[in-house]
Image 1 (spheres, rainbow, N blue to C red):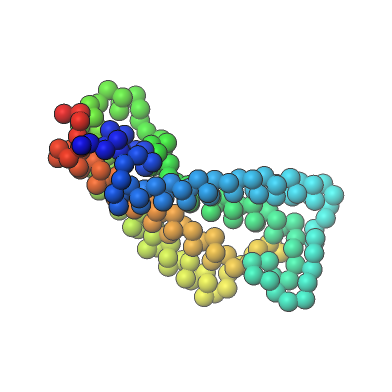
Image 2: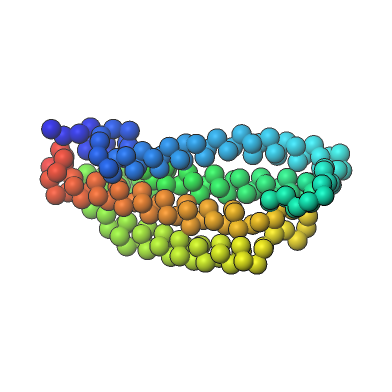
Length: 199
């Protein structure tokens, strides 16, 4: 019996098995991360209001606090916005690939047969997506560790512990690599007759 997932391989909510479970988990991560847009918008409004009121330093405290150092400033509010936006972007990219919401050259692709589309997907993953993800994960890990070791932070009263946001670069591309691998397994199954109803 053919699983529904085999008819719609980009829908991780249909079908069973370990590949489907992993893809569903990645999509769930992306959906949860998408909610970061709410605090981002709130921070934008706070930043605009404080800027209009010409308030630079909001709070001070005695001991350093993780990410914020010894004070909360307008600059750290601005940094937090792009930190959260970067995290949201990194955690939602893989889900977009799984749900087939990423950019394609559709005016060419729409005329291809399902078999041709699957072949192109496999070649694209093996020759483009996988190498890119591996390179970014390896280098992203290196610059995250380097950022941690040097205690990298803001030079203008913004946020500190910048390694946190940098860590999400290898995490995001690692999720994309896993998502691409899972989808490639599905495409290969379809191409070699296991669940391929389009032949």
